[in-house]
Length: 409
Image 1 (cartoon, helix red, strand yellow):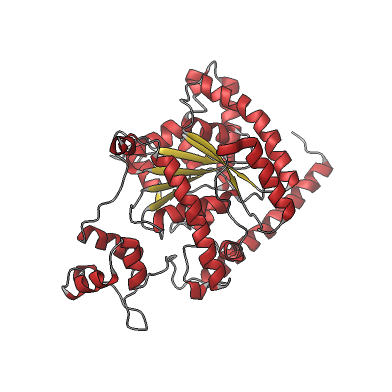
Image 2: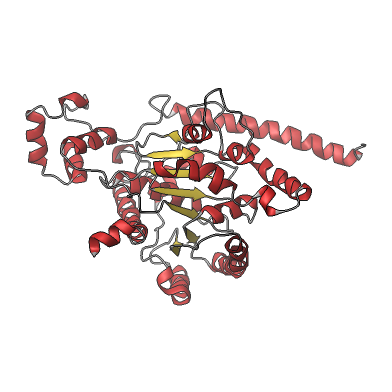
């Protein structure tokens, strides 16, 4: 097969561009690692008062239990000022000692799989996901078991939770079935191990990689050669090969998707129990979102016909909202008029703290106020804002858990 000379020149240009991009990426990673205190990313520590607030106990009670030696086995470190500096793992272990039980879903409660998707780039999809996950994990003592699946081959969510492995197994590897089991290894064990631990104790992530793009090509080829859906089940692969083997290990799974209606997105829909749609309050973004929604019903009909059981909720989340911006205020009003209660009560406000944290691949709950590139006031306001959003999201999740309804009855 011969290649046109102009096409060959284009190929050489792209190869050269790829080399430059790879060097630039390596430089970014080195720059990022240079700002880490250790090779592993670390979560911020908590003061004794902050730990007491999170545990829901009086600070004096906590001090008394320290004096009694109840926490001596936890090897809690002290900071330069001589005061205790608690890690989140310390606090979770202290909760066990204090008899504060974790609040995992019961066997009768379904695993909540929430897809975050929009076709409009720049709407804050990934930033919202990682900050919501961090808030769910770090701002209460319930110790939800949270999974993140990065279904975008560009790996934006994965960047916030860097792998300790040089070549980790990705979600695409599992969906493409291109991993051979070791002797005695089960598929469930492989999938479970592929969900990597992170610097936040109760969050695990299944990363993505650029090779995951091949899933699209291979699926299209498989469809051409197959005679029916029963042979391929190409929309069920995420659900059946990735999520179902480990569903008992999580309470909530958040799925980050690419801004594309591809095979991976259909897989996300098939696996989902709920959906969050970020909306940036600008006229162009709102119009693009409405065009997307016109097609979403037709798209969902495909997975519904193949056995999807319906969503527990679908909500719109206004992101990057600038208070005092009259144009954005009018757009938000239009969104709420159009979609009513399907719009989350609290928007995610524009914040220099979120921008500064994201630039170093941190959530706003990862760092001390003294380490933030933004002001202390901005960081605290942003954290409170995300907590408000998460409180509503948690209410939506728990309202669909049978155990919660039983306790209310």
